[in-house]
Length: 254
Image 1 (tube, helix red, strand yellow):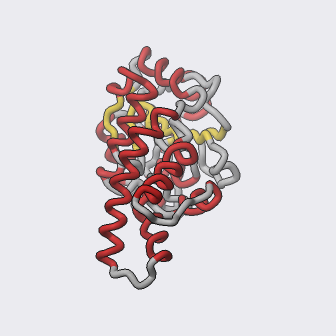
Image 2 (cartoon, helix red, strand yellow):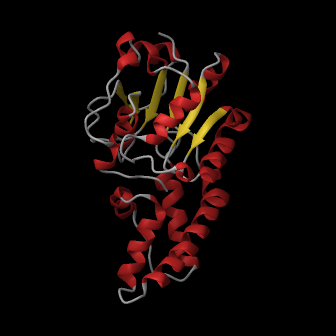
């Protein structure tokens, strides 16, 4: 059965954004606002189990100032998150490249009329900026784009994936999710969507049980190959995986 839609995750899937984008943007935001916090990559990687930058920054400030009032912490976190987001988009995102094979697959999908969509824990402004930077005019072809503003990607029963499939109007057997992590895989499978995992340096070694395909990179893969490997007639009735996405480890979303 031919593919009619591809649903992409963003951070770690379209580009290796965490190490070269979100981490330095966080560290620069801390420095500019006068906080003596500078995360190493190992520290930052361990904190990816916490959803979104705000939770990680809240933890850091609470450790720095354990006697601070909650409302004081929240005000400082809000300022940090706002600055970090601007730094990421304006300074660090332009330095990022798409992962190998991503642009080629998207170009092929567009040439063959395959729908493109995003389901991510990232902020929509960051998603759209990355798409414009990496794909130019092709960025306009992604619809829907469901990010942090649409809800929690890892919520039970995977409402964002279900909403995305409904908006696309495609059947399960015509739709493939492209993810990089165990948690992303579980979110797709909780909605009954087949998922191919293209892991990266920090998701390598996670359990990808239930994935239709697991590989290091999208490089060399084409639509017909992905359809043959990942989407079978049985996929039309693909059952969701038993564990809900919210019960799993890495939360992501920067």
